[in-house]
Image 1 (tube, helix red, strand yellow):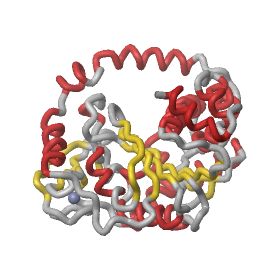
Image 2 (tube, protein in one colour; image 1 turned 120 degrees about the vertical axis):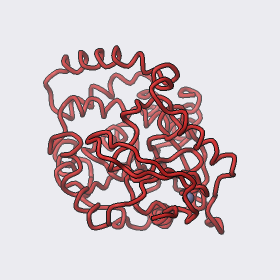
Image 3 (spheres, protein in one colour; image 1 turned 45 degrees about the horizontal axis):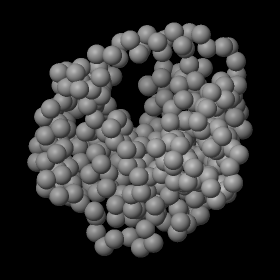
Image 4 (cartoon, helix red, strand yellow; image 1 turned 180 degrees about the vertical axis):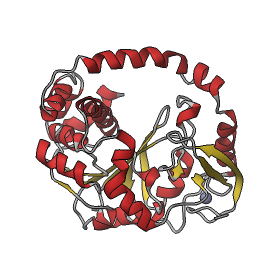
Length: 334
Ligand SMILES: [Zn+2]
C-alpha cells in the first residue's frame, strides 16, 4: 500500500515503529491528505475476523474471562465514559444504547444503571457469554455487519474504531442503522496526546492512529461533532447528519502539519515532563494497592460498588426528570 486507506491520498511520511507488546517492527505511514497515521500493510478481513472472535482477548489479557481487578477498572472507566456522554448533553431517558465491541459487558451494565436501555455486540465468544451470564445484559456474539436498522439511538465504540480495517464503511453502516436523531460516540487513542509512554504508542492490533482531524475525515461526512475532548484519549460525540455531505470532511494542510509536528515531538522528554510520565510509577503503586484490597465478590457486586461510589453521577442519572436531566448533567460535569 502506498496510498491512504481512508482518503486515497499519497503518504507524506513513512517510518518503522515497534509493537508495544512484542517489539516486532511495524511499518507506519502518515497520509498527506487527511493526516491519518496508519499501518502500511493491513491484515486481511478473514485474518481479522478469526483474531477477534478467538485470540484477541487472550493475547491482551492472558485470560479467557476478565479478572476481578479488570472488572473493577472497567467499572471506573465506564463511569468516565458516562460522564462524557452526559457532558455531550445526551439524556438517557427513553434511549437505547448499543455498545459495539462490548467486551465483558461492564460498560453496558453501568450504562443501564445510568438509565439507558442497553445492548451490545462483541465478536469474542467467551467475553460475550461472560457478560450475559454475569450481568444479564443483552450482548450478542456478533460484529458490525450484523447491526440492524433502528436497533439503537446511541451507538458507542470505545477503543474499537482503531482496530477496524474499513473505517469509512463502518461509519456509513452506523449512519444507516441509526434513527434521524441518533448519536455516535467514539473513543480512541489520540496520536496527538503527550501522556502515552514512547513504548506504548504503536500496537499491531491498532491499524489506524486517529487525531481530532483525521477522525473528522473518517466520520464527518456522515456525522456532525457535538462535543470533543482530546487532552488524553480522543473522545468525540457526534449526531447523525440527516443527509451525508457530498464528500469526506478532509482537514486543511495546516491541520495535517500539526499531526506531523506532534509525531516529531514524541519521545521520552515529552512523555516525562509534559505528559506526566514522572508521576506514573506512584500512581501505579496506588492502583496496585487499591486492587489488592478489592473485596472477593462477584463481578456484578464489584460493578455495583463502583457505581455506588459515583457521587456525581448517581443523583444526575437516577432521580431527575427527563426534561431537566440533560441540562443539569452538562452543568455538573463541565
Ligand atoms: Zn488519508
